[in-house]
Image 1 (tube, rainbow, N blue to C red):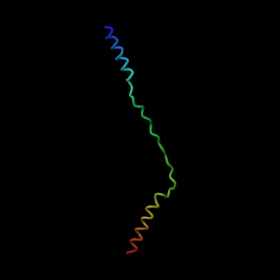
Image 2 (tube, rainbow, N blue to C red):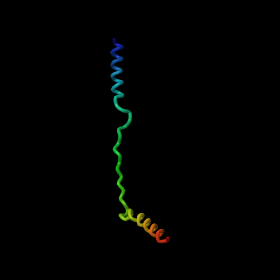
Image 3 (cartoon, rainbow, N blue to C red):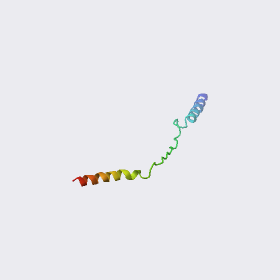
Image 4 (cartoon, one colour):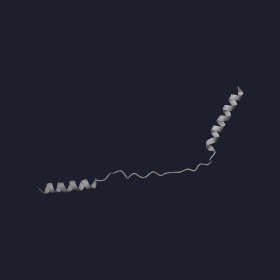
Length: 60
């Protein structure tokens, strides 16, 4: 009977010792905000493309 009680105590202690997860808790992602350098940056590429297309049409 003592061995049965000892086994019950040891198994109860073992289950509480490993009750948690061994992986660390997930951290919240860090949000990085970058400032834009120029407000005209989005119009330069289409403007150059339009000039090239207009030059190609005029060359014909």
